[in-house]
Image 1: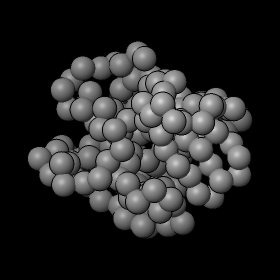
Image 2 (image 1 turned 90 degrees about the vertical axis):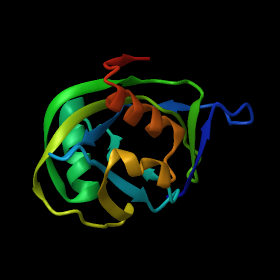
Image 3 (image 1 turned 180 degrees about the vertical axis):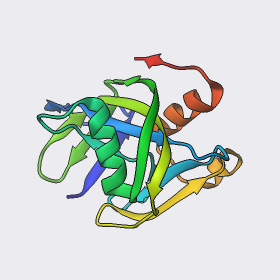
Length: 155
């Protein structure tokens, strides 16, 4: 399913859903951060997605990381709650979602970076190299909060 993201864009359509999602910022022992390149937008992002009924937000973050990247991660902390009402995602099926993301911090404990139906690129990226990647502003904020140590973000 295709999607268009709007971030602080006054021309964005009005949201018709709000679905909890979880992201996982995985940093390896060198400080490199796990990113995936989304097939639907072509942008690099933290692994994450919608929470399923019957799972906690933390379980969602770990599951989405494995599904989207092939990396098994262990949670080590909480980065923040990101609920910008001006971050809208319009899907081709008519859903227009206001983003609501709980973002966790973790470390890799297994697995191998693996491409899949959602991601055509998966890699660990050194913080010094992040500017070379097309990363959505909302993800840049989350990564920036982590690197600056300014968390938890409660917004």
